[in-house]
Length: 291
View 1 (cartoon, rainbow, N blue to C red):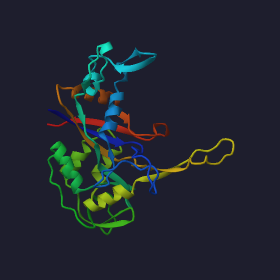
View 2 (cartoon, rainbow, N blue to C red):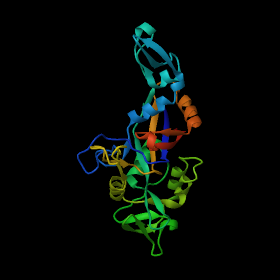
View 3 (cartoon, rainbow, N blue to C red):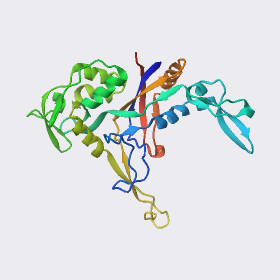
View 4 (cartoon, helix red, strand yellow):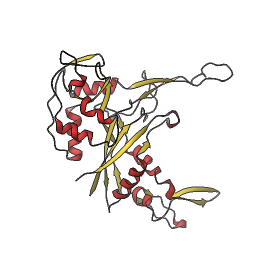
């Protein structure tokens, strides 16, 4: 079975909504239930990737309506499947791609030195190893300690992330930095990971992922009165820009990943989640085959 790692590096904040909420945030992002870490569901990614093949769609007449369907025999039909329509000679088929949910691998937080740092943790690194077979030793980081580089350490060898202070007796291993740095190519911002990576404990990583996302207020103003339309004031949660997600894509039959990889190398950037017209969800996308 063919396998590929897909990474999404957020150029702008990302909002993949979980629906309305009765809590303090009206429209939260989707998260893992047991860790509270933000995710991008595989169904959302499949829809976004499918849209890259819109040129392979054709318009057919169905009753009084014209609808767009995938061309028979196209790459899109092989990758994403086709619905049945016997009158048009279309047989129902499942796509050969199996797309998992995208998980956070590196999360940006404010730093007292170096402006911001990317944090990760042992659990996240072990998950990444399990999915990709990456060869590095996962460090044991617990409590209020962190592995960090001098570029984010203060003179007393402390790391200050948001309002929290961490002792930093060591630095992230070179093989971990190399594994993460190679996931996003030719991005001048992500290249800073070699100086701005901080490895914290699982509990601290969970806390930041849950509480350090952006919450913005959205409104709709009535042009005649100049005030907010009744019921049009709400809060929206966003995963911050510069967050790195990754997912695993597998193919059940044949080698359709070659077509997907070629398409992504051409596109290089996709939009994920809602609020595209307000600039949310634009991500640099990179794919690498897994041995």
